Length: 151
Length: 215
Image (cartoon, rainbow over all chains, first blue to last red; front, side, top):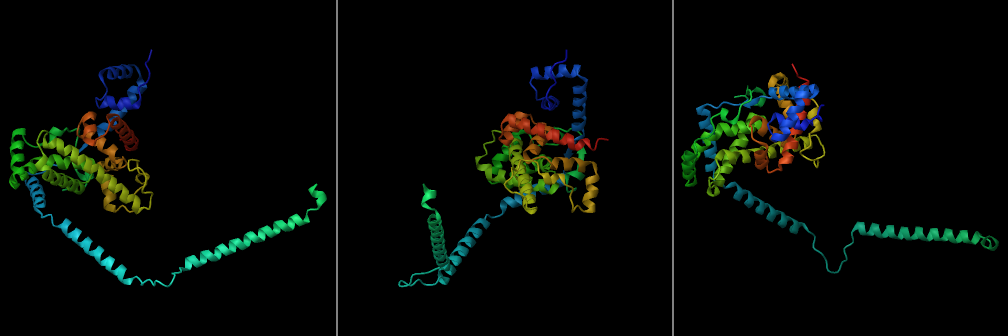
């Protein structure tokens, strides 16, 4: 009798030798018996066998050049962080000066009124008016109800 | 030198030992001590001895020669900065595995994000999700790029590009570098179960992609 088919993940792990010995024996035993799984495993091996490893050969001169480039970079003075930090501080200071310089002076006697605030007040008044109108409609309706209807 | 993995030389099933990696532990310790004392020549020799390993590792992780070179250089610069605290308990190659793998994953994530922003796509998506854009053919591919893509390596490159950064890193470290999943988990700072899941998803996606090109 055939054992349960192994999961495809188990076939992958078997291929890479990552199943523990008891699982490897179980899956191996199943593959021995099951043609479908054996075919699937063979396909997996064929596909992964085609995934060949890229390899770059470096000559001695290329290795030397690479090492020289790295060593040169280690010698670069670490000035740029200081320069960047200095630039940022200067830019922030300049921006602060400009913002303070362009801001209109506030008068202590005047109450500043933004157009947005005025608009909002007008809208509130409009809302109150609409509320009153709806209440008037309600009163009108009540007037139309006769005492007989109410009883 | 070829600019991308597609044109790089391919060899079948190499292991890390295929290229000359580093030097013996004793020499490495001596050069490390020299480098710690500010000896550029000692540090240069360390870099030179590990350059092929670092470059190949980065190439397998990101797939492009120039990007791989940038990542390898950055890793060595970090090594230089870390020298005062580098006790040498582990080999430089172990340190490079961890640093280059993480730099590569970060690089691949940034590249994905850039592409998403460029296409005005949602930037808050999980960077580990496979990018649907990868499924679309490159509308602006130059004739030269198309020619390169027709090469055998181009098929693999396209398939690998469809993996999420972590899937790609796990696959590269297992399939190309032959690292056990437990070590990959340490290198990438992940749980072993997560690494297994990434490997399985990567293999499934590659199988689906490469099925079309079965000879």
